[in-house]
Length: 102
Length: 458
Image 1 (cartoon, each protein chain N blue to C red):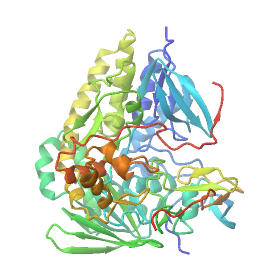
Image 2: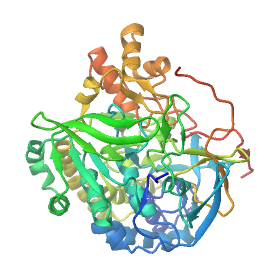
Image 3: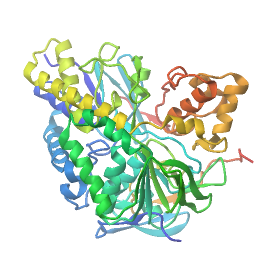
Image 4: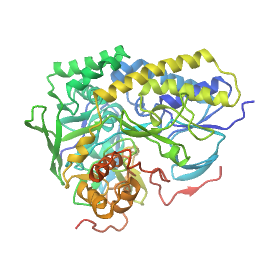
C-alpha cells in the first residue's frame, strides 16, 4: 500500500526494525510511530464510532486521534512516541469494542 | 532569600524567557514541559540525529529559534527541568503530574502558566477523513520529522500560518495543490494601518505570498469551504470550495492542512479558578490577565499564547514580564528599564494582533451554514444536526449543557477541536451571540490518562 506521508529529507538515518500488527517493518531512527506507520500505510487505526479509518490530526499530543497500543496493552500516542528496535505495535484496541453508530 | 517554590508550566518561548529572568534574579524555578525537548511547538527541536540547519528549519525565524535554544541550554543546570511531564490537574499549591506512566505531585508557592495554544478549527463536511490534519500539525510533520502530510496537499483556512506553512512545504520540495483562504483581500487592505505596527513582519508575510505565486501555486482568497471529498476507507481525495466569484472549484489532493489561527490552552488556569474574558477581536475566551501577566488568582501568572494569542515574539516578552511581576510580588528588586521595554514591545504586538484578527477573521458564519450531516465532533462522529437538536429539543443553549446532552466536547480531544465551532453552532441555533452560550469548562485530567498510572513518592 502506498504511504500517506512523504519523506522529503533526513533519509540517511540508521534503520530500526519493529512489528506492526504482526508484520515486520523498517523505520528510521528518530521517526515517530506515526511517521513510521504512515510512510508505509494510509491509516493508523479504525474509528470506534464509524467505519472510517483514522490517521491522526494535530501531531502535537492534543487531539488523541493517533492512539496505538503495544502488544502488552500500553496505549501510545503515535505522534509523540519514537520508534524503538523490537517494538511490537498493534493498531486495534486490545479492549472490547462495540458499534455505536449502526 | 530565593526560597519560593516557583513552577513554570511549558518550555516554549514564554516559559524559557520566564525561567531565564527568574534565574537571573537568584531563583531556581522548576520548568515542567509535556514535550521531550524544549522550544514549544513553534521552536520545536528536531530529534537527535537529524541534520538540517537552523536556516532550513526555521527560515526567517532561524536566529530567534537558535537564540532561544541556546538560552535554554545555558539555563539547564540552573533550573529544575522536568521534560516529558504532563500536569494533569492542580489544586491550590499543588500540581498533579504524570511522566512515563508514573504519577507524582509538586508543591508550589507561585505558578506561571505558559501552556501555549493549538490550532483553531472550523469543521467542514468530510474533515474527519484520514488525511485532514491541523495546519500546525502539517508544520510539525515537516519541521520535526522532515515529511509532508501527503503527496499533494491543500492548505485551507485563514491566518498567517496558512501562508507560512504552505511556503515551507514548497521550499522543502512537497507538492502544494492549492492555498485556499477564507478571508477576502479587502479585509487585508482594511487591516493595513494596524498591520503596519510591525512593518518587518508584514513584509515577511508579503514575501511568503510572492514565493507561492512564483512557484505557480494556485492561491484563492475569499473562498467558502464546502466539502473534503474522499471515502472512509482510503481518506481524502480532494476538496470542493466556492470561489470569491461564486464558482465551484474542485482541487484533487490526498491531504488537507486546515486551520484558522490559534486557540489558547487554558485548562490549567481554568482549574486554578482564574477568570476568563471574551476577546471581541478574535471571538474567543481568553485568560483575564493584567498587563504583566497576573491572573485573577493570587500567585498564579500566565504568559504566551496560553493567555493571549499574540505569537512567539510576544510570548518571549510576556514571559519576562510575568517573571518580573512575580519578583515584584515577592518584594524582589527588578530592572524597571527592562520591564518598560517589554511593555512597549507588547503594545506594538497588541496592535499587530488586532490587525491580524481583522485581516484573517474567524469564519463564524460557516458554523451557521454547516449542513446538518457535517461532523462537528470528529472524536465521536457527532453531527451539526445532532448538536442543533439538543438546542431545539432540549433547550440546551449553554455550551456545557449542550455538551452533556450531545457529547460534543466530551471525546478524546476534550473539546480542543470542536468546542469553539460547537459554540458557534449552538449560538446560531439559539439565535444568541457566541459570548452568551459560554465556554467549555476545563476538566481534570486535562488530557486522557492511563488507568495503569503508578504513584511514586515525591
